Every structure is written in structure tokens, then in C-alpha cells.
Length: 601
Image 1 (tube, rainbow, N blue to C red):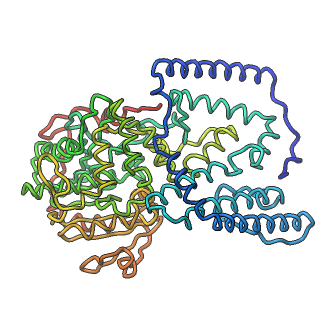
Image 2: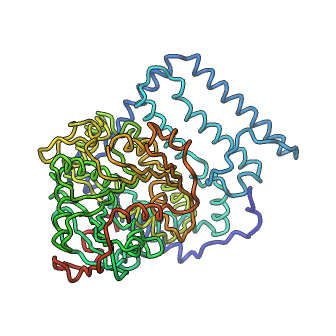
Image 3: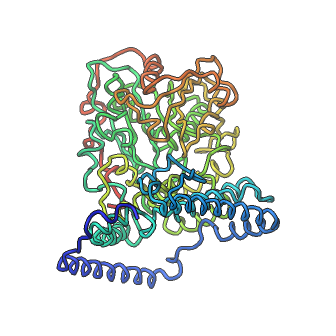
């Protein structure tokens, strides 16, 4: 056993231990009573159902798997042969003989502790798991009769199961946890149990795993600190105008439309990585929409309400605030999907107020929308609708869990090990604080988005979507557009984002950034991280593979390339505008009050 013979086991202070167990018992009793009271009040509706229809999916999958027993037997025989080979290498290692691993995963951070390779027993456990996980995740590949959607769904949930049963997630099979247990006399497990109870209390009976020190950050104090004023608000959003840092600014202001699935301050975490502050420093008058965190009162707000009360209302307010009619814009993620729809709506109305638009990791054609499509078959959407229509909104914690599942080892299981098995508190990390600051989604909007974009893919079809009584066609968008995609984006996949280049009719500059959905966007030049690719062909080829074949890699951030593109479309320089002295009265200081509404503390 790895290094467990070194330090002498330390016995915990019995007085402290007694007080700790008393606290745990009282809190557990209170949580159980609250759960029982909720069950009695809500009845059967409070019990979690099979919203994702996993039972039906796996029953169907199992039936089709067993329809060809020869393949099943062959796969099992291959696995058993690998197990026997592993047993032989383990025996050789224990006898002091050299033995190459049967399977390895050198980049798997779960097995970074040296004991997983240095100690024969833990190396055997590790390789046994890797063999089993590979076998599990490969089960669906040769099963006939599965649709592509069914196969994707089965693969995704089998991978979730494989991640959950990793030996790192259990006390008895994790050498790091065993060492900590011996060295602390078990205090790590007691502290871990206390952390579990704290997370259950924070989540009001739901396990809300802390990813960071939630007390280390406060919106407006040490995140979302760029100075500015809220100059307009309605039911759905507050509009922030940021204070200039240059004597002159470009005539055309910049409107940023962030996603309402998350909060806008991912673009303003801290001064050194704030895209908002950097854009202000380049001489742009920056306006940002801060979406409300809706409750049941806004359950009827639909996708076109987000257009009317979001970017369109913002355009009216900007003109009143600074007296300028034409602007440039950015849409991020679902905010980009909304902006694409808004541009098409404006084109149909001959509204030319947006002169150029940038899209951060945004999708308009959902044919290749990635793993999120595993949640969008008819039965799942119907179940989700039944759940959210009753309360009027999609709970932000449920959305956060969905996104965390896409990277479960990093965003779920690593914190289970750290917080509950090792008994440690998570470190302060502003990005994970933002990631935990979830937002609700109105029931009407969420259902419309799932059905018409992910399920039916109507947005990309001419006339497929009607907003505020106007059928829209994305091909009527003729203004210059800058498209950013992330090479490793697991939420808006590269292949999906690239499809925009084949839809809009105006000049489109496509840029591929290194990293994923967040770091691919928030990559300030001073960090000198990652890379980006550009292809100066006058016409974007039909596929992203062709585009990449002709692209040139550039080290570092893409922000300067975007600035060069946008500055040429932003008009001449004019005296800087003070948001406190514009045509609209300042309602409150940035970042405003809407962004401070939290659903889990």
C-alpha cells in the first residue's frame, strides 16, 4: 500500500470528534425532516422520475445487444483475455520482473498520484478499471438497429456510469485518500461528511457540490468590477454602459448580448482577463445586456420576448443614451443564436441599425450540435416540459448539472474526491465561482429553444421560425460578421459553429481559437496562451476540414485580429461618452442588481 507505513497514524481528539458527530447528527436529522415534510406536502410529484427516459433507452439497447449473442460472447471473451493478461503482468511485477502495462492512460488526471503506477496492487486496480471502462464505452459500436440519436444517448450515459465507478471515487481504492485517512486518523472522512451536509443544506436537499470557495468572491466587489452605469432596464434585462478609459472612442458603440443560460460577467471576471475592460481600453463604447434571473412570474416569456426586450430594446436605449443609431454587436453562445435570429428579423423589417456582428461560439444550424443532443429526443423534451411547466422555469442547478456532465471528471468527480473523501475545502477560483452562479430559464423560452433549434433545427430553414409575427431567413443577413469557434468546445462544437459561414450572405471572417467554450473566448493577449488559426481565402469553403487545411496558425490571443476587423467598421473617433451624463439617467452602478440574484448561495 502506497506510503501508508511512513507516518504514524494520528488519533483524533475525542472531544472534538464528539462535537463534530453531534453537529453532523443534528444537521442530518434536520435535513431528513425537511425532506420528509416536502414529500408529505408535494406527494408523488416530489419524487424524481426518469426524466431522461434512461430505463426505456437501456432496455431497448439491451434487447438489441442480446439479439446478437455471438458478438456479446466475443466481446466478453476479449475482455476476459485482457483480464488474464493483466493478472499475469501483476504477478510478474510482484515477483520483481519487468512488465509493460496492458492498458495505459498517461494523461488521465485521475491517476496522477505515483502510487497508481509504483504500487503493483493499485496499478492492477487502475488497469482493471481502464479495461472495463473501455469495454463498457465500446458496447454500442457494433449493436445493430440503433439510430444515431439512440447510439449517442447510450454512449453518453454509459460514459457517465464508467466515470462514476472509477476507483478514484472510493475510499478503499484510492491511495491518496487512504494515506490521508491514516495520517489524519480519519478526520478527512469526518470533515468530508460535514462538507456533504453543507452542500445538501446549500442545495436545499439537492447535493450542490461546491467547486470553489463561494465566500471568496462577490459580484461587484472582486468579480464584475468594470466601472459603468445601468442606463436602462425592463423585465428581462438591465443595460450597462461602461465608463470610457480613453479620451476618444469609436463613433459606433458595441453592444454585447451574452447568454442567459449563464451570467454576463464571464466577460468581466477580473481586470487582467476582462474582455469588457479590454474592449473599453481599445476605444469602444461598450454596452452589455445583463439578463434577469427569472422566476415563475416570467414563465411565459418566449424566445421572441428575449429578442424584443433584449437586443431590440437595447438598440432603442443606446440611441437615447448617446444619440447614435448604428452600432456593432457581439452574441455569445445562445446570445449569438438570438443575435442571428434578430439580424434576420431586422433584415425582414429593413432595419439597418446593426452594422456588423461578432459571434462567440454560437450555433444556428444544430445538425451537429454535439453531446447536448442526447437530451433532446421527443420523450425527454416532453418529460422536461411537464416538469418545468409546473413550476414555470427550468431550474438553474439542473442546467448546470447538464453542462457539468459533459466534463464530469473535471467538474463533478474531482470535487467529490477533494471535498468528501479528502475532506478539503475547494480553492478560490473565479471561473468556477461564475460556473456555480446558475440562472433559471423561463419555461416557454426553454421549451421553444429545445424544440425549434435542437430538435427540429428550424432556425436555419428559410421561414422555419417566425418571431414577433415575422418569418425570418438567416440568408438575408448581409452585414459583415466575425465568427469565433473553439477547437475543443464541447458545448458549441467547432463543426456546428462553422456552419454559420455557409448561411449568412454577407462577408464572413471565420477564426478558430485554441481551447474550449470559455477559454477559447476569454484569452487576453497579456496571457500569451493558446493559439488561433486564420484563413484569408475570399470565400469560406463548404466544410471546416477544408478551411483548416488552408489555415495558418498564430500564437496567442485572437483579440487583436478581431479589434483590427471591428475598428474598421466602427466609424471615426469622437469624444468619449460618460454614462453618468448621457441621454438616459443612470439607474445604478455596474454591474447592476439583476446579476446579483443567486439561486444557490
